[in-house]
Image 1 (cartoon, rainbow, N blue to C red):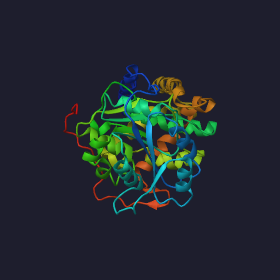
Image 2 (image 1 turned 120 degrees about the vertical axis):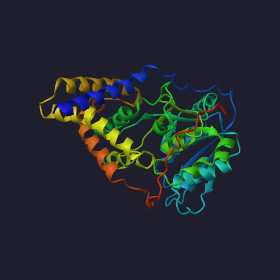
Image 3 (image 1 turned 90 degrees about the vertical axis):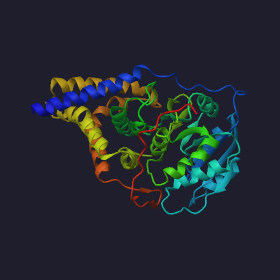
Image 4 (image 1 turned 60 degrees about the vertical axis):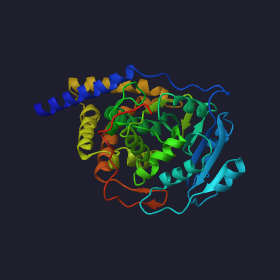
Length: 372
């Protein structure tokens, strides 16, 4: 028991240091002036997105910085392509998926090649951007080579919000807040591929999507790969400009987001073990002991820290409510799901099952950052 207490205290110190980085955060993204900045190509990969694509397209087609909007239809089995064309997007049918590629990377690679403007912003079909986001992302490239954005999440119910916030907390405890002035090492870089911006010529030269072609956690794989080669990677707060409705139910949050949380294909086994230990010692164990009515003083301190984090999360959710406040009570469940997905990763998405690559994508760690 003494060893467990010492381990928990050490993990608590690590988490406290990570959370402290949140005191130094750049300001959130603001809409760019309508006539300011370069024209941008917006690329949206889409597979079976008929039910969710329209709000994204209607918003981005009115963005003053979006000079063209390209939808890459990745062999959809519904009317995704027809809907996109009817709304005014340029629709490109993706070529057949080659062996060894995950569909999103294959679609994005073709979209970047088809783009005609110097800056590319990619959006997922389930995003709901505010006009001005595209220009703001382009402007952020003045200090970065690759920028991704943290959105505001729209959860359909209190239970969905509670589970989502608990799972989000596992990321913050493992990596710290997303938008800070602290530059992490490449192998600990995070990203959100739902909204990304970069210069087209640099991405074509790096062939970044081909480099991470087999990664299921494609956004983090790309960010780590490029950061390891000297790219300045930024993860900025776009909660005022971007909303995402990721899932339709609690079960889908558990299944789909839980699948990608461990970042197994871009994280070494040593770091996976360390991350699991941190989550169990500082989130799972205190919540479990509280539910059993046997919390220690250290547990109570960690629980207080965890509830304070829910206050910081309010900005990350549309209509934050009781679900967010009660999310710490689901931390045991989130720790279980993280453990399950770490030891039994799945490579299935939208009707496709991808083979496990012989050598999982791993970021370079020795390259230095450059300003180019």
